[in-house]
Amino acid sequence: MTQEELDDVLRQAEQGCWSHVELLDRLLGERAQRKRQRIVERRIREARFVMGKTLESFDWEFNAQAIDRVQIEELATGDRHRWPVLQLWPKAW
Image 1 (cartoon, rainbow, N blue to C red):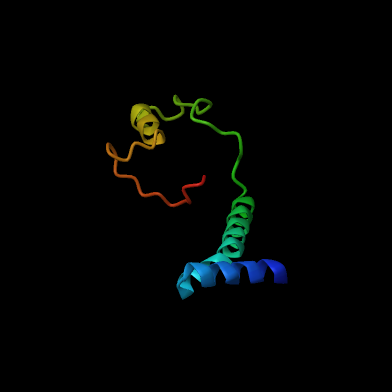
Image 2 (image 1 turned 45 degrees about the horizontal axis):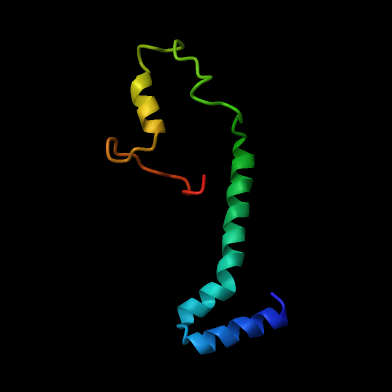
């Protein structure tokens, strides 16, 4: 952030009567978000996930007795009212 940008944010904070939390969010929020995004991207790279795999390309016959295709496809819709799902990733994904 340049000195001019900082002055502008401080001026807005003063005019808008921002709380300390609001001011810190404006000053550090974007930088913190970029850092979180880089961490997520690095972790995905390190996990070496196989890209390009979709449910459409999945071999459902591989273990048809143990895999409930209908249930998996319903879960993939993201309908949280039908199935209790624990989301372990950011909503932006």
